[in-house]
Structure formats: structure tokens, C-alpha cells
Length: 145
Image 1 (cartoon, rainbow, N blue to C red):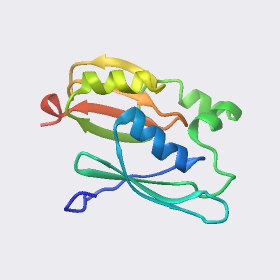
Image 2 (image 1 turned 180 degrees about the horizontal axis):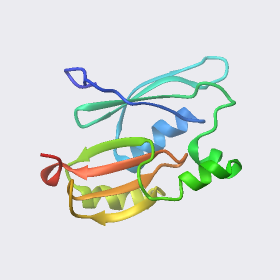
Image 3 (image 1 turned 60 degrees about the horizontal axis):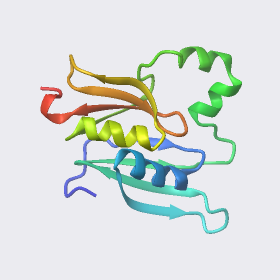
Image 4 (image 1 turned 30 degrees about the vertical axis):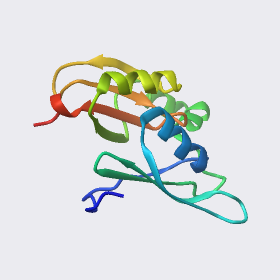
């Protein structure tokens, strides 16, 4: 965890939190810093990932939870609002080398919502993870001023 707590910490729910910790580290280069699982069910009660100077917390609350991808499969309205490549609900992450990050995410099976683009607010792309959560990646050097 960073030496100073960030002011904002995203908390994201996953159907399989343990798999999410591993996939997000592999695909997006996040670093796992905490994993607490229920000793009976093995479900992730609390997990933390470090990215740059920030932290993302994740968990799997109940077997009844549906991630965005699964929800779209059974809900026409969710399918419609997810038809755009924009970040509907998601997290913006600033990275040092966006081109390398993009190739890593693509090779790991991330759903690419937009190829790399330049323009306000900078050098960027959008992607979905394996459960359909949306991420916006922005290169720091060309990022938000």
C-alpha cells in the first residue's frame, strides 16, 4: 500500500474475487497487496491492489452477485446501456507507458472498447476486464493537467 492513504479508493465487486485479483495483476499490471478469504467458502472477503500511488479494493459479497458482463446476458436494458464504448461505471487509471499497457491488456484477453486515442484528456484507451467492469487508462505524461 502507498505510504500515504489515497483520498479516494474504488471498491469493486466481482463474482470471483480471487480470480479477479490474479487477472487484474496479469492484464493491467496491478500489484496484489492483500487477500482475505472466507475459510469455509474460499470467497474473497477483502482484496487490495496497488496501482501507482493508488489502491483498488475488491471483494465477492455473495454467490448471488452478477458482474456487468453476466448481467448483460440476462438483462436487455443493461445490454443497451453497455452498447457504447464509454466508461459507464469504472475507474480511470494513469499509467507511465500506455502503449505497452495496451498491448499487455490486449494479450491477456481484456475487451478493448477503444483503440489508443490522442486528444483531451490525453493518450488513452478504454477496456473491460474479464467480468465486464470498465477501465479508462491514461498516460501520465500526456494526461490531465
